[in-house]
Length: 36
Image 1 (cartoon, rainbow, N blue to C red):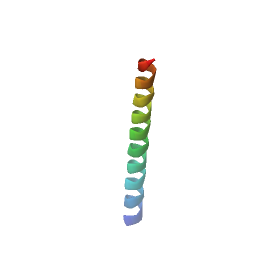
Image 2 (cartoon, rainbow, N blue to C red):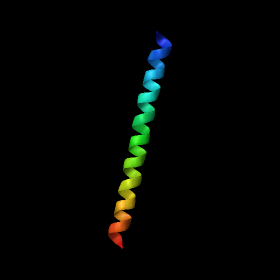
Image 3 (tube, rainbow, N blue to C red):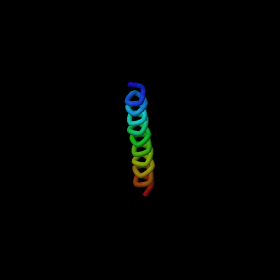
């Protein structure tokens, strides 16, 4: 089904986007802690 295919891609991109956001957020937090 074409709709389910689009839905699967949407969730994969959403998970990747959240993963990158959390990764960069944690990296900035770690560097901020190291500076102190």
